Amino acid sequence: MELLEDADGMVRDVAKATVIELFRSAPAAAKSDLKKQLKNFKVRPAIEQAIVKELAPVPGAAAAPEPEQRPESARAIRPALGASVSSLSSERPITPMSDLGRPEQVEPSYVNTQRELDDIFKDMQVWFEGRETEQNWLKREESVTKLRRLMAGNAATDFQLPFLTGLRGLLDGIIKAITSLRTSLSKEGCSLVQEIATTYGPGMDPMVELLMQTFIKLSAATKKIASQQANVTIDTIISRATYNTRIVNHIWGACQDKNLQPRTYATGWLKTLLRKEAHHKNHIEQGGGLDVIEKCIKKGLADPNPGVRERMRSTYWVFADIWPARAEA
Image (cartoon, rainbow, N blue to C red; front, side, top):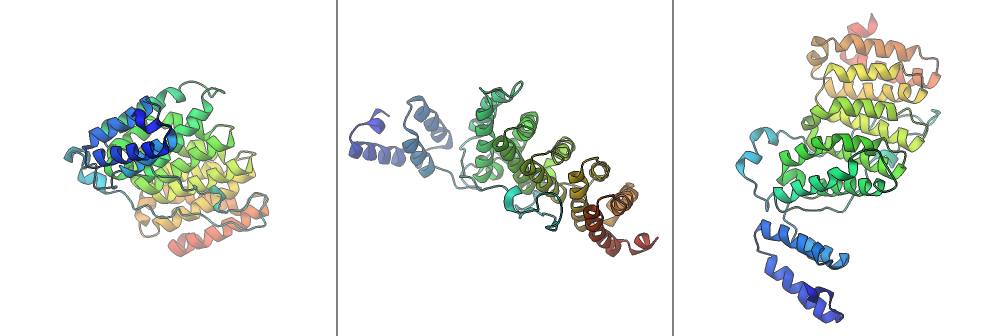
């Protein structure tokens, strides 16, 4: 390890190449231990990252977790398709929809064993305890970014259920990041949730209730970037998570909000929901959701703001294509 910090560049290169060659075919546990040793010996970040990158497992193949970690139910995860985003016209009084609310790509990070993954979650927990402070906010942001990097790597494929379980356990901390007044931290939190939705789909269902409450409140924020991030994230959740009447009730709540932004965004969320469930109408009809949707549409069509009325008219025509008799009533 000392040779990796040798003053002679040639010696460092030879040492780095030797470490890579020795560990390339090593067991996953050994590679995981090597990462710890590189940090313990305080090897400079550039050299550490070069070694780790060379030894990164191939997603979906190298980790080979035990069978009980990969049950058939875990395979019912939706493909990571692009997030569905409702379109809004440029004349509205709030920031128009753009790529601003979409996650920026991050450099993938890889784990070799489930124990390594568990240790990462354990180390993160301390940074999310209590209130946000000058001492912990940056660590919170780094932790959320780390989760995104792990998802971009092999954690969500090779360790599907353990990674999702870890995310659920950290949900309170993720919500603290989302609701932070620091724009960069809040943005990372929103990006993480969008990626959870597109990667896990129905797997995120147990988190949807708290997240919908959080993001609808955030959609009313005076900061335009925070409001738009919330809008895109809710739209992504609705397009990926399993339908239930609670989602419709949240949209109904947004339709009644005193703030213009949630009322405007709700027209797009409702349109996304209708399009998603168009071929599964019984889901909505049997649970009483159809009556709530009608209330949302009537509320929006009578909204005092002309922009909300216009956008709800567009949503109404989607509704009319699915339930023409109800639309004419």
